[in-house]
Image (cartoon, rainbow, N blue to C red):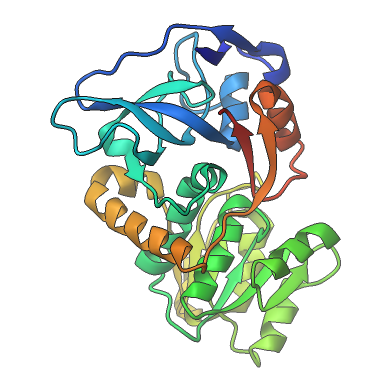
Length: 327
């Protein structure tokens, strides 16, 4: 089978090599996935560069989210050969390969109605956003949800899940193309942060009340300004720090305005409460089948174009998810 291997650190286009390797065998409690599509994430670039928090041994293969068909399972498995699934491979054996062995606890069934591209591109983003909105923020119908970086992977999922929960959604994005994407996802109001002040817009549209829930994957100045438009009893969800700067929250301001700053560490949640993740997966699949969510995909790439796709992702000019067609 073919697999993209990394044998030294560097830029993706320099260190990724497509090679023929042996098809993996499966250990106990594993299943073999014939990969149909793989989604790429920014941390795949950091892995190539050796800048990620995890540094797998050489050679390794990137790709943390795949969709495909089960090609082999162990006796007594809860899965069946031929079953369509989403799978989350573990390093060093990632999903930019034609076959990958995955622990059964990291495999999730998908409905026949779901395309392989949608399946590969939705797991991390939609699970992160579902957990954030429902478990951490307890979002309620009629509440105002402000989503930053609405055209990004987790942001686009948050817009759709917010609307599905009955929230009034205000999204921020930079530029004409990305604001148009947010509108297509169902955002009620879209703010171009390059030309508009989201704090002013939120206050105007809520009659000075502010947003009940703020979804922040950016951090830095965005977090600081978000504190100016958070409502009484509001919740600011700390998703990540894509802006590069980690902000500090003044405790006196949190007290006076009576809001919560809520951490969202879905990775840890998934390790500690795998049964809850399965329950969330079932709910997300139901929302997909009901047509209430539809993963935002920037572009599909051929398997031979993985380095090109990662270079494009590194430029930060894309939106949604980049998907590689493997089969």
